[in-house]
Amino acid sequence: MSRTTIADVAREAGVAKATVSHALTGNRPISEETRAKVLAAAERLGWVPSQNARALANRRANAIAVVLARNPDVIANDSFFPAFIAGVESVLAETETALLLQVVPDRDAEERAYRSLAHGRADGALLLDLRDDDWRVPFLEELDLPTVLVGAYDGPHPFSCVRTDDAAPIREIIAHLRDAGHERIAHVSGPLRYVHSRARADAYVAEIGDDALLREGDFTAASGRALTAELLALPERPTAIVYSNDTMAIAGLSFARAQGLSIPADLAISGFDDDHLSAHLTPALSSVSTDPAARGRAAARLLQAAVGGAEPRTEVVDCNVVHFRESTSA
Image (cartoon, rainbow, N blue to C red; front, side, top):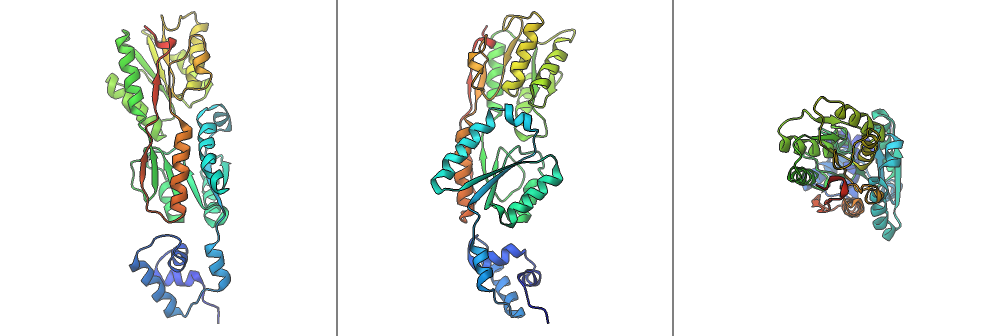
């Protein structure tokens, strides 16, 4: 006769194997009703966990993870990620917890990465680049992997979340440009599948009233240059362009100057994320500093709490500051 396993108990109780483990160890909060259901199923089947199984259930990897489904070139040139990771590491260093960073090419690889984390490679994950109706949110809930969402995700979820207001800076920049006399203001967004790109684009459309001068980029310099060329080739070109990151803005500024335009007399330009070089360009680039390190610290603390069994909560990090410089001056 085969020996009863934790999988048998989970099946009998109608729960996940991880829930059986949590019912026995108390590592994660579960309802008393679920705990009673698990214990009753174990008693019916005559199952008693071995000492080895208990030790395995209590063991932690002492690591958290970030999985990124992005082009490595975008990551390398984006000022957000190094600062965010530095903020995360500053918190993890206090407990000598490791950070695992994995870049994946597609959804299949991303799913495999998260399954690996849930099977003991890491104690939890930070979820970045949130998307509308993000498949990863219910997937990670199913895996029972402690997770913190980094971004203003509005779908249903059971996780802690770090939020910022990406719309307010766009409204402030547009108001500034209008005060300077600009009426044809364009926006080069990031990929609109991302929640933060969509929030900025929605704020732009709400302020302008239509999306005729909205163009979707991919955060790379190449897309910034190409879309700037497209906008400047219009019969009635924009007099100002608001970009969703500084990499695209700098490429756009360079292209415009190569076409003989004066910045900001002929074309005002602003960016987002305030790259460390932006203030030192000629002209200096108006941009939005977002303090990724502060978001990294908040996310790491929330994830440590989630791994320890704390109830999920949302933390709003008020860190976006618009810096108006020469590239948008009247």
